[in-house]
Length: 137
Image 1 (cartoon, rainbow, N blue to C red):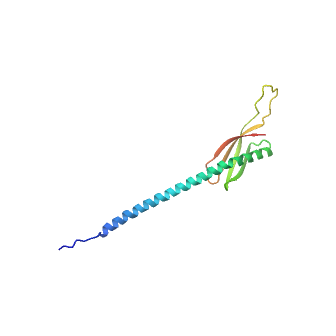
Image 2: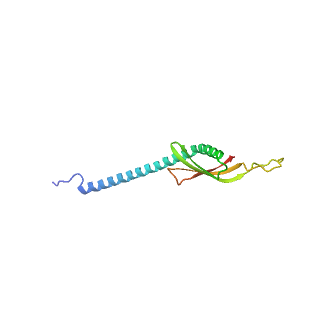
Image 3: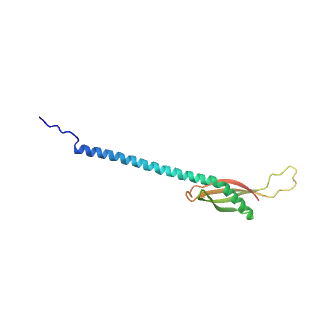
């Protein structure tokens, strides 16, 4: 009677272990990459939320600084939204007078100023958000 060996040989066990550990390493890398992508998305959303909610504060700060200064060409400042500092700068685009009425016989002074406001955060200084705003002087 011939004895038949039962079980796996050492080579078969080693090959199975290599395949198993390789697949575990690939899954771990995919999980790590997905966590990194999720962190980037969360950080980007937090920045957008802070910028969006900081716009009214920037508008108020711009109005205050324009009223205190005599027709500035640019205005800068920092506001804080969701514990995130937002750096902003407003440049004059155009100064213009109010529309004339049909019965006006004189030229109105240029009381309105159009500013282009640019905002950025320390988290993403290369991303600049901008909007235009008219201030009455």
